[in-house]
Amino acid sequence: MRGRVRLPTTFAERIEWLAGEQALDAWLFVIAPGRYRLLSLHQVQGSEQLRAVLESFHDTVLADPSESDADPAAALPLRLIPTAVSPRGPGWRVRLPKEAIMLADPNEDSSHAYLLFSSGYPEIWLPDVARRAVHSPLGELL
Image (cartoon, rainbow, N blue to C red; front, side, top):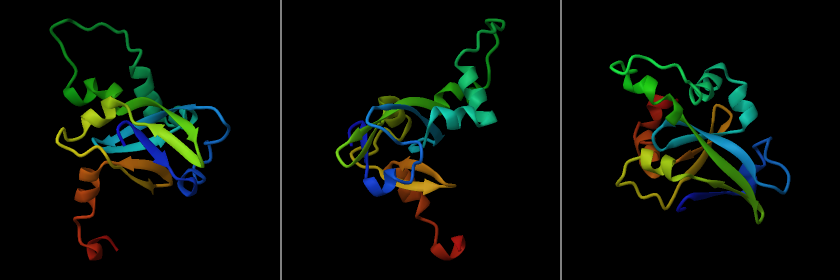
């Protein structure tokens, strides 16, 4: 993988905004470290919560230097990582930025990723996240 994830044609065809012959700007929404939802700018702007995250990139309100946001609030901009999706051969390729890889377990084997759809959106899962997710017995999920 090394920073790029190939989207097979059958997977890419399910992503309605992937079209054309040029690279497209996109966002990786960090659901959890190692679990990334691939979204178009339109999808991000269409979500009230994700739009607020985008706006946090430009927050210029200065607080007292001795004050600080709680870690989860301060890290909001880390929840959206800019990326690009490019047509490549019969499918598409997503650039997985180093920032996304480094958020996951540093001992993680980043040479492979799993592709799936969750709640109708394409996601990229690194192996450790997938391993933990399939640990639950099937009977508990159905």
